[in-house]
Length: 559
Ligand SMILES: Cc1cc2nc3c(=O)[nH]c(=O)nc-3n(C[C@H](O)[C@H](O)[C@H](O)COP(=O)(O)OP(=O)(O)OC[C@H]3O[C@@H](n4cnc5c(N)ncnc54)[C@H](O)[C@@H]3O)c2cc1C
Image (cartoon, rainbow, N blue to C red; front, side, top):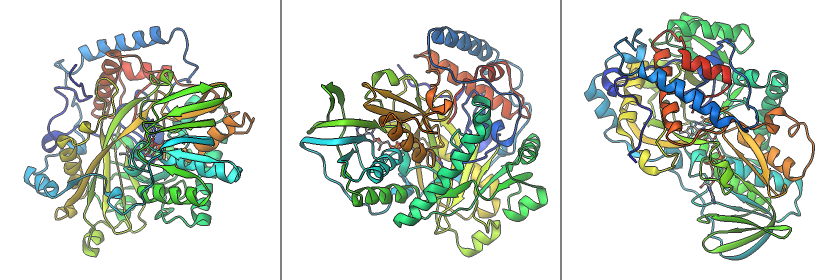
């Protein structure tokens, strides 16, 4: 079956001419939020659309498939009137529809190398596991979630024998490729959390802040060199309707509203119409260093780490668990599955998330003169506010990491590195970079890369246990997992200890999202949703019937 992407014929042209446009609100994080493809549109969330979003995630149950069929039938109907219809999708041109000189873009990308800039540094190697290994706790996955789980498990009980296995290299996947926005939100934005768990949103927000502060404290006390900077977050409006979203968010205490003059004084972009600055709810970090340093801390706490050790099978063996890799067999009392977007060892989990590919560029280090042209003295993380949004930040050596906008789902839910080097996505990102910062036309890109985001229908992590409570797992960070992974690790440990804690009592932790439907419904629905979001970006944020229906059902698709 040929791969389908979410790009819709007739709505997207090549990057240089008229790319899809943005919208949303960026409030935070990564590709943070937003992104195009959700059904629930995070954009508004952040910025404030107080449009009554949706309802809640209930346990997936009988009726799910019927509900999916209903939704996707509506999606298909909407599509029929969509991409091929005569009415104009581009009712409103957005700032990112501007023409950018093709030669400028090609030249800027010409010398870029493919692969995460963050991983382009020396890193320690760990052995492959062989033979028979017995432990108390086996952690599967060497990204942030697995590493925090192992570290906190060792801190809770230093006598416990803990083993962490990683199929590839520590931090090679999302944890070594992300934007490095460390956002306090556990719910992919306060609006998403408020809509789903109105009764506990204050607790969730407080826990998120506590988790962010705890992460900063851990990094300090363990001496992790992760280039942590508590810069805060700047959400920018690039379209008139987004100004209202930011004003609304400011009115709800989500930050300080900056008018056109103030935002352009802060960061000099002709695209900015307003900004929302929150100095405290977000830090930026070097993503790969964070993973490598966490691994070092794990080792120092007595955790045994193995790389190139791919868990392939999990089975019960009496009161123990047995997990097999190519060269080793692990016998353990408990296991945590921290495998993110990769196929779960528990087959029943596989319908709950889909991989969505997110694309990133990094520039060469800016000279003082180049940086001086755009201001940005406070070095905040920045996100713009469309459904399809960009996120960007400075590195310690003054490169700009610039990502987001395209979020591509491929038919069949596969994670596959051949989806990563996508020329059109990089050209589009580069064009949008120069629209945002025309004063940087002499800047070149040195790296381009992509990563798969573990997306579920509620846009934030979900947990569960299996094998009589001996296995805990978490999935579905949906593009905002750098800080949330630390919280998720603690939840997994609480669940294994079968303890009732403030964390495990959360409705967010006890409930599960609806699964995505099987193919081809998943592709049809996602494609329709993305097309609708593009339309909304080109219609001053107005949402069509499909998006409104998904909003009402608390369902969606995001990156
Ligand atoms: C391009 C991009 C930008 C992002 N930007 C941000 C951002 O700015 N802020 C933010 O908060 N979030 C961001 N995210 C999301 C964030 O990076 C992730 O949510 C987070 O890294 C998830 O960590 P993890 O440990 O759960 O997953 P991963 O880092 O994916 O680690 C999972 C690990 O499990 C291993 N594994 C899988 N299966 C097995 C197996 N069977 N046996 C052994 N090992 C296995 C994998 O090899 C992998 O290393 C971004 C993601 C991407 C892709």
